[in-house]
Length: 311
Length: 209
Image (spheres, helix red, strand yellow):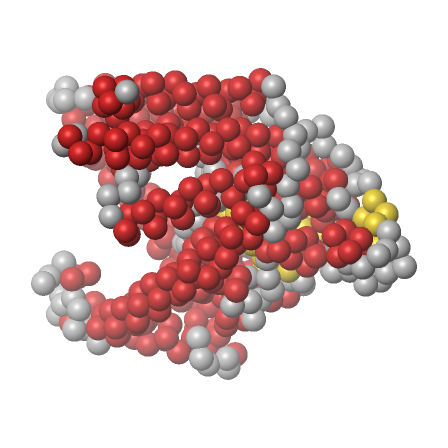
């Protein structure tokens, strides 16, 4: 046994790579569903969007790249479906050079699935370099920062964006951010100065960084990583509904049932073929279990072998 | 003059930007808006500067056949090819069937995603080797890490309904307290550095001491 633990501690790391690959591939090949609850910060984003009246306009800053796409795309898609499903208009832009080819096709696809028209119901302003300076600039004067949209159409000719001079003119700011420049830069540069209403979705690794902003009320909602995205998908596509007798007062499904009322499900206007975030949770399940198992076994081996001087 | 002029410009621009956060008068907004515009133009120019620098540094190494010149050649070819297909595509470059879209979808996305995905394997290996309960502090870190890793996924909730609550507490109380302390410390440091730069006490950005 002692020798086994010594060998285990010194095993070739390629065995770990192989184990990790199996832990990731198995759930992909045979996906399973698992129940999960919704965190308060994620529900806050949903409720904030639900509270917007139809015809409102939101600004989405989609700042992510292919590396962070699996974590953020499910949220991005879900929130777009929610917005267009509620006839809310969308003006989108990005501060990441690698983002436009990624975020624009998704925006086009979701908008088309809801029958929304470019220029009237949504538009894409494209990429603007300058990082924090670009944030300050759009906080102060959008037409000056983005004189044209991605297709070089003057912004005044787009009914959806015309009349919006500053970020504070939008009903809500939705930040889908994988890092810098992103949520933190928006909070530091413009949120306090213009008292903006902002919600954010970020990667799991950045999530803990932004919790202080959520707790301080600078972010009105926060979704972190794949679990956050999956929870948002669940809210938008699986759990959406109204509490009977309380149509005008928003109650979520849990509090509705707890209060003794009936939750009437409201099917989404457009149901995607796949819910990528929820599907990915089973991968995350096994991946996390594998790492935790390795850590526990590694420590067991460490304690068994330590008295004889093996570390 | 070579030192004084940049210091004067730094002082004037720094003071204007400082006032921008506190003075809502429209005349002041006009000045600050122009400042932002200049900054954005400079940022765009930096892209061009980066491009020139990249070629300047790598092209001679390729021509001299220095170590790893092949990788640098691939990088330069990719750079030129992407630029050409990007400019050629114009505003339609992201439409299906366009060469730029193809390069992005079938070269950039797989490469970028692969780099990020490799983290899963290296993190598993690093966690196995480094996470050891060698002392009290390491043990606290280890236990917190395991609780968060399990509690953030559905299996944690299946094991115990209290696990997500514990994870949320860890995130919202100890994590927030520590991060706020770091944020406040960093902010005070940034204010002090900003004042030193505006007043010309800190001059390292000018290339001096």
